[in-house]
Image (cartoon, rainbow, N blue to C red; front, top):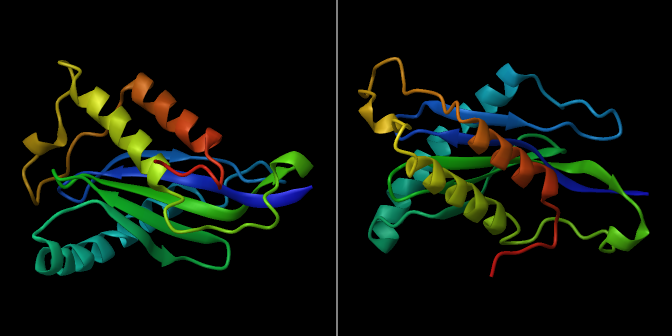
Length: 178
């Protein structure tokens, strides 16, 4: 048995810097999350300054385009945050546990760690699920929330939550988006 990276948390942050959705996944061998929901919420909030700093740099270098921000920061020797920003200002964050999943022989990739672009598939799937949510005529997007207010509405869609759960549970290193 070997340990490979797994997703510990997926988060969606609104354009007003408010958390819209958080999915937390257990780590092995204890099968419990590494942090509490409040701690994961604070970790997601800690990425906002990095998004802001890199967005300013991106405006200067590529005309304001958004997209894959890659590794935002390493939290400790076990957890790291990766980020993606849509062109509407909604941000997706994946917190990766580098020793989160135990696997047996055939699924081990020779001690392979995280490579550049490993999270692109995750963000592509998250964006696809978010777009499907926006296509729901009963969903009111976060943009109706005034900046500086109490924040936007949390995403309460059961289908969206199930999709986030599927993404987090099925991802493993070596699956790179084309």
